[in-house]
Amino acid sequence: MSKMVINGERVAAQDGRTLDVLSPVDGEVFETLPRGQAADVDLAVRAARDALGGEWGRLSALERGRLLLRLGEKVLAHHEELSRIESRDTGKPISTARADITVLARYFEFYGGAADKVHGQTIPFQQNYSVQLVREPLGVTAHIIPWNYPAQMFGRSVAPALAMGNAAVVKPAEDACLSILRVAELALEVGFPPGALNIVTGLGEEAGAALSRHPGINFITFTGSNEVGVLIQQAAAVNAVKCVLELGGKSAHIVFDDARAELAIPAIVKGIVHNTGQTCTAGSRLLVQKGIYPRFMEALAQEFSKVRAGTPDMDLTCGPVVNRAQFERVNRYIAKGLADGMKVVAEGRIADGVPSGGYFVKPTLFSAASHDSDLFTQEIFGPVLVSVPFEDEAEAIRLANATDYGLLGAVWTENGGRQQRVARGIQCGQVYINGFGAGGGVELPFGGVKKSGHGREKGFIALEEMSTTKTIIQYYGA
Ligand code: NAP
Ligand code: MG
Image (cartoon, rainbow, N blue to C red):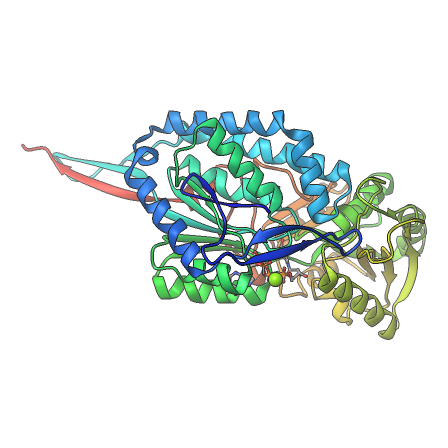
């Protein structure tokens, strides 16, 4: 059985209860996890609070940075082991898992290097006053992590928090805890003091809810569904703590008639099938200018029909989706697309020989005459791309913004003025011009607008999100 990490110890749940871990590849149980409850969360929050007042809290920024850098090295030293764990737990093709573990190490490297480079300010004020603005940790930070990129999101969330001197309590998703638990053990091995980084496993509505409501936390960061995001923000409100929410997207590619199709097509396919479409930043809508629509869709269909789904070891483009609920959800959306009269332009294939109990879905490319279907506005979280033609720049921007989400966007054109106008016209947190990247981009500030959430992660900006300022005003006499 896997163990949680609380106060530097590997522990079971206090009441001894466990959860089964099912393999996405065949639906069979292959591991068990502690089913942490409010009492376990409470222990973890106390351990984090004690760490702030103890050895962890006394470390300098340089020393915290060194620990993070060492953890980055340790992750690289265990790269293959962690990749195998991640792939087994989530069903990711092994190459995808390897790329994710590289990004995980990169978070520790980036924020390890940044820890001692966050400077305060001095502020000119009245005569004979000295005013300093110093950055301080928030305190105990709570991190609720989704299952789609467990290792990456763990790094993205805890590395800046630890760099700034917070003590973290993490609740991974019940479907994807194993890589996170292993990295927390590695953190102890490289010398993180007890309580600096705690992991409580369990169910969202038990351990997750208890963590988000705990009066001892000072901040929450959450990535996941809108429904749970609202609960998190309500819990944060009760304790008057700040929260950062990343609630997914319905990001659009806008392809103009002068676009370089040879660049756009592979990026568009990858942007929706990578990680089997279970990516908040997936490019899940495709808007193509009318004049090139038939030709472009034909070329795209050729590329899309090469997509293959298989087991992690087959290492094809897609794996299975993570669990039965996702499997049913994606298939429901595909059926809805057909019922809404959308045309299937291309399908990928599920490889021969995958186990029959596995959660494999068929990658599907749809085309529609209008943008009316739910498939254009709701997050599917699977390898399903919906396409529609548009007339001109104004219509493209209007359609791109015709969803409650606002996470990413992409514009494909060689016209410089249009690149800027469209990039500025799309309501979202990141826009690509003639490219598209999901995942990675550790250096690039990231987050949503509208119902995609608020707050920013990645880059230097995360260090500001995960800290606070104190203004020290000193009168030094005439
Ligand atoms: P979810 O329920 O929002 O799960 C996200 C995280 O929140 C998990 O760690 C989950 O734990 C935890 N959680 C669940 N209920 C909670 C509660 N009441 N209080 C505190 N924490 C709680 O998402 P899901 O059900 O796994 O997936 C549903 C849909 O959400 C997906 O189809 C997708 O559209 C979206 N989603 C988006 C992202 C993203 O990257 N933005 C990631 C994942 C899912 P447990 O998993 O243990 O319940
Ligand atoms: Mg859930």
